Image (cartoon, rainbow, N blue to C red; front, side, top):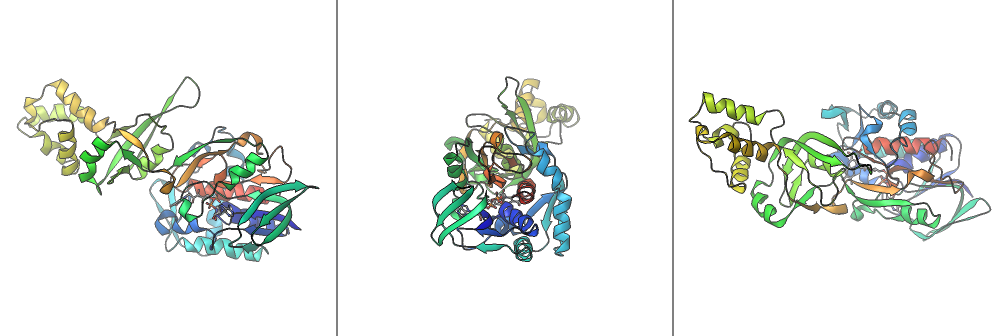
Length: 401
Ligand SMILES: Cc1cc2nc3c(=O)[nH]c(=O)nc-3n(C[C@H](O)[C@H](O)[C@H](O)COP(=O)(O)OP(=O)(O)OC[C@H]3O[C@@H](n4cnc5c(N)ncnc54)[C@H](O)[C@@H]3O)c2cc1C
């Protein structure tokens, strides 16, 4: 009989195992993949954006916005930075407070495995679950391809649905279902957009071009009042549509059928600039002026798309200058959808937090059953927030299991 079995040797599962092990609990981690922490290894372009200097509850999407507060305040970014420093992993800060390893994301996995080993945790890899858990006499029984295991506390840390090729499975939702714990509808998050065919063809020649942009969309929070959210980061044109950090960020808030607005000149009042230049340089061609601020191919492609001819500035009336401003500062691309779980970094939705304790992560209706990490209806922004949630929720459960 194990004190604790954790399903999933990812970010949250390993953190929970370490903390429970340090408390003297007999801990087993069951992982179906060949290697632990696969998403950590491929994260942040191989350098793992392991946390962020500016973590706030408002950086997370969850139907209950208060749910994240307790865990995030008990295990902070500073705690994880201290752990990284303890293991002498050198790191650097990038824009927006994002922290990355200098060398390799593998160092973060090694950190977790070393801590787990020191805490006496056993990690069993290539262990496939055959049947769902059953509760009897206050313990859980798990049937796996490697045999039967029993435990007092069961922690489900199997993450979300993104990157099925890396071993993502819906096991957490299935277990929740078994105990009548509601699961919020899931969809791909932090994911590139695909464009509708006609626009895709028109913009495919821009594939590979990156530029600073601001993306805005309406947030429908279930009430009549909807508010706007904006992100200012790099936009990347791809052969399928649009990507780059600004698109990944806004994708968390975008709902199918809704619009987003893109400002390709986020640091400029284009209309004032056009009106001013019309007076000071009336012979200057529109394309010349715009190409001083944007990649020339983007200017040509968008003007052609909107069927706006590049003329000397003096030849436009104010209404036309407004249309040009609309095109470059309020562009609403026709979004077909997202690239889906195949390329998404995270899964939006998941286990409803209403029946989960925000302090211990135990289910309120099933004693001894815990859900942590991305399996829950909690999704962070791009920038190290999802790992911070994994560390914080894993740490919190690790204090109780
Ligand atoms: C390409 C990519 C890059 C990312 N980069 C960043 C980044 O730089 N910064 C950041 O904050 N976030 C990043 N993320 C998001 C981050 O990886 C996740 O939010 C985080 O790993 C979630 O932790 P978790 O423990 O909930 O799940 P995971 O880390 O996904 O761990 C779940 C574990 O459970 C295992 N598992 C699944 N199903 C079963 C099953 N049926 N039986 C047994 N085991 C199972 C999986 O194999 C996996 O090991 C990235 C995600 C992706 C896909």
